[in-house]
Image (cartoon, rainbow, N blue to C red; front, side):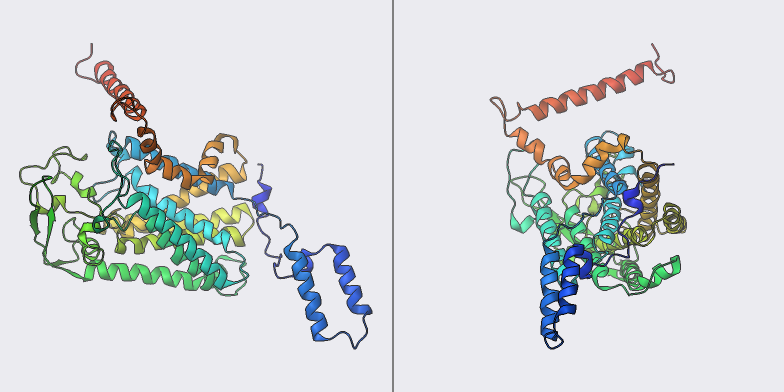
Length: 483
């Protein structure tokens, strides 16, 4: 079995960035030592020694530093997640199994967000394995998080309109504050600060010693989970009202939602939505809630559609799937990924890594499924504890599988496309998933805005899909009307 040596020898712990001699050529070290030894006793003052060390530090700063090898399996995992995100965005409306679950339950699309957060956690462990200055690292992490936050507001705050609408701009009174990139930015910042400041100096040589070294980070994960559960099941949700514009020129219509409960995890009266309405404001939430695809709210369920005659009042209420309280558990997912990254940093043997990965993976899957069985349902919108455990466990399974295939067996050729996508994930997300590229293409049209290449390609794509379904219906051996 071939091994990927660049990963097997990933950043030996024996190297020390602060060791001046490691950064100097042997001749310069010898000269410095001989100069120090041959100098008179009276000249070997603390100032003289300080000048020598400073000179060596300046020389070492200009020496080319060897670049740490990339973890190829992590790039492939990231690229696979990007590809899955594009697939569910484009085909989710046609194939219900690819679309997000309207409320409780789990579909393929519901794995995308936790997979990204898991990957962020693994990457942070590799990025901050050696720190020269915690304050400087904290400043850089804060700047990166602010950049992601600003980019998320620009892309998902409402500045870009629908794909078929050649307009742009957003009313600040209606801007959406939360979104995918905003959630990733929050999780990234919190977990980065935990990795920078909340780890001890213990030596890691076994599983228990690994837990001891990062015990404060695990304490943060447990505190966040406990806080989430206390708020979700302990806060009182009162009745609430909202207004929506049913007609462009008509007055807004007011709806009243009856709640007055605690511990409710349904679409109307959960604490996640209440906190977002109170802090962010209902006008700043996502205007097309996922629960509008439920049978109670759509005659075309599990797709969006017209309201049934007896639809409840909450069906059209804005609800943000990347809200404040649900983002607390997103941080926990990122912390779980951080633990998997720590295993890469501290253990070099493939077999040991896989064993230490599969132990928490199995525990997370069993615990999450047990929670769902006993009533704490898997729910992506609320980011429930069972959803956190199951999706993090699934991420662990997939990551271990890719690691075995790519980094242990060396089968990289078949994953080159995914590896490239993983190395350019943010660019692909902006251009494809946020519809920036289709909107750019739609700006060039013939005579009318509707005569553009994007609409032509979309019509051709849907014609192929319709033809395929008609063919299956007519010629399938299981069809009732076989010709």
